[in-house]
Length: 386
Image (cartoon, rainbow, N blue to C red; front, side, top):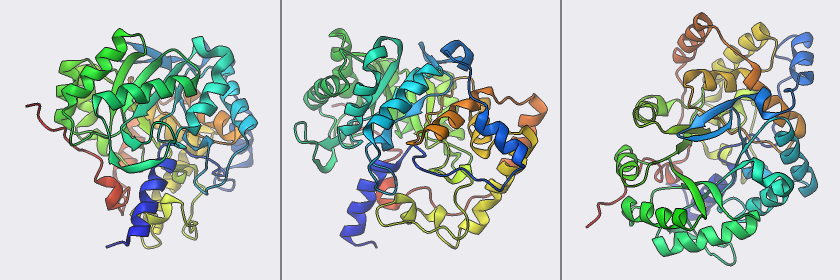
């Protein structure tokens, strides 16, 4: 049993680490110099038409989005340069990205401010997603214990988001985690009121239980579900993706590069600094890393085969699974952002994706994806309405 200090660090780190690949160096020696040069110099053609579009429910977005979570603090707890984060956001847009993903919990509050500043000159041409649900003081941004999806709190939280994001509406609003004290029908009712006021256009859920999805969708149709999904963690394939397909809901994978692992930046000698959530994830424990690196070796083989980097293969694989999947890799470094969105230009013929799927399925990942004290918030079913 971990002590209280470790428990609190894990929760804080989870909010600051999930869903992006900030400041992770790309592997250099895993494929040929020609392939590396091609991968790093090839950049998407300008414009969203070149990058391609996908549908999350009825919401059209670029085929790859950007998670901006670590733009206020990286995994390693360093603070990125604000002007450079604005530049990355603007360059992503200029290269066709129209989906930008944030949350009140990131920072807290600060990431929404950075995103609002970054997109201000082209706000009307992009989709902003944000999230509520953690118990965060509305004024100070201080994290308080547990979750809070009480309807009155949701409405006030959205008002704060609008100010920080410098906008009049949230295009896609997620419940970040299911509140076990609030019926999902009450949450949907609050979002419906916000829609009637024009403050929210679409809504979704994150890391929720399956029955909560059905209840929420029946009350107010969902546009997207957001959960961890990558070659490193394939849990959504069992039931979540089939449910999305059944109900016409889009799927947005957070941590699509396995918190940097699938870029090839982590090896069996890697150890993590205090405050980096990967240091307390079982899949990155010293005893498990050698086994799990078989996945990186597979990616390197395919990177050589396609003359791109492992990161692009990992993201292109995700997009090849379902047409309604839109990954949101994040980065605090310009070359990595450009590398990630270039995955939209990697394609597989049917025989290739079947071969790659078989190879991925043959690798059994050892170790839990998150610490127990964080996993307890995933897969939760909302209480019944009485």
